[in-house]
Structures are given as structure tokens and as C-alpha cells.
Image (cartoon, rainbow, N blue to C red; front, side, top):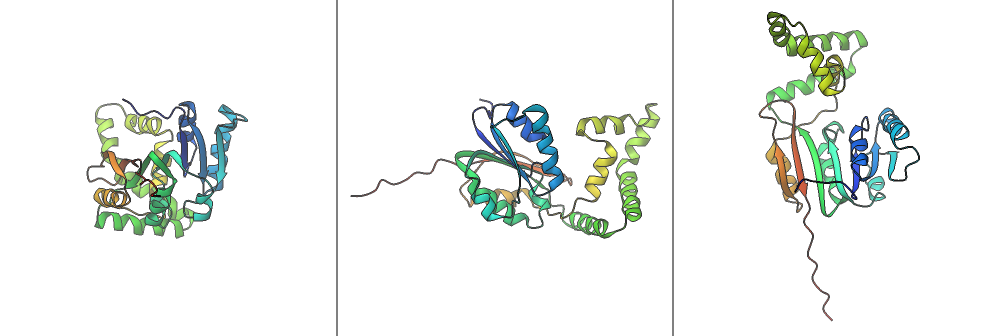
Length: 240
């Protein structure tokens, strides 16, 4: 039976643009969205204003996944969704721990975390840290370098097939933003932490979660994607 959010409570922890929250609301969930970044909060709120104005079934707030006091005020949810977020907090393992108690018994946890590539991941971390400390001209030069390194083979292939930049244009459409801003987002995405798939699996298994679905990134630098469930806990009857 396919997974359904209809009639469920849905927490979007790190809502970003708000598109995942919008999708969940359209699929019938009661949604609470929050993000640490004020611009992301504003973007999510704008989507709510456009598509679900004055809707009591969708709330939007500013908050941090590292703020235990804030999280404890939210209660628990059938679905906790944090896709490609927790590795950008600067305290990934703490963030992973903090979303644990937000999942109801019988609920689901969706997370996506950057894959650990060893030395390559450490090099990317240094590059990203340098990027955010640099001036605008240096940032632009770094992004150009990453762009050429990442794309030149596909540009050449398209040129040889007499369809220049076709893959570049279609990639932007598929991502929902231009390919250039996708490069900038990757180059400057800092803080940046990574984990091996088995580390995330062991982390949540020790906390009583069951892995329902896993999609690894196949050794690449993208995200490993996880769906965990929290079984209903058995309570012993009170002895009289």
C-alpha cells in the first residue's frame, strides 16, 4: 500500500522554499513548517499565502532544529520530514538526535544526509568553508571553477550531438532552479557534514527506529535517503 499523508500531521523541519510543505498540504496533511533562515521562512509563508491563505491546517514559523526548547513546544507528528537539511546545521548529530522525539509512535521519519566520500568530502568541506569567508569576486571565481569542472564533459557531449547546452537547460528545469544557481548552492553550502549510510542506520536503530526504505547515492557526493518508522511501544499494565 503506498504511503499517504492524508489526515496526518506533518512537520517540515527546515522547510527551505516551502515546496515540500506545500506538497504535503495538498496531499491532505496538517502541516507545521519551520526554518532557521528568515528568507526561507518568508518564502514558505509566501507559498502558504498564495495557495492556502488563512489556512489553519498549515502553520509557518522561524525556529531552529538545534533549539531543544522550541522543538519540545511542537509536540509529536505522524511524519517528520527533514530533507537535505540537518547536515547544514553545524551540529548534524545533535540535529539528528533532536528530531527523534518529534516522531509519534507509529510515525515516520524522512531524512536525507550527504554521503561520506572520505578524502573527497573533506576537500569539499575546506572549499565550502573558504567560499563563505571569501569576497564576492572570489566566490564567483570558485563557482565558475566548480561549474566548469562539473559540466565540461556534458557541454562537450551536447556540442558534439549538435544540441549545445541542452543538458544544462534541462537540468535547471528538473531541479526547479537554474543549473548555475544549483552550482552556487553546492559550492557555498556550508556548514557541511557527511555520514556513511550505515552510520545513520545504526544511529536510529539504537533509538528504536526501523529502516523502511533506503536509497544510497552510490558513492557519489549527493545524499543518502532514508525512511524510518517508529514502532508502537508496548506498555506493561500497571500492577495493583
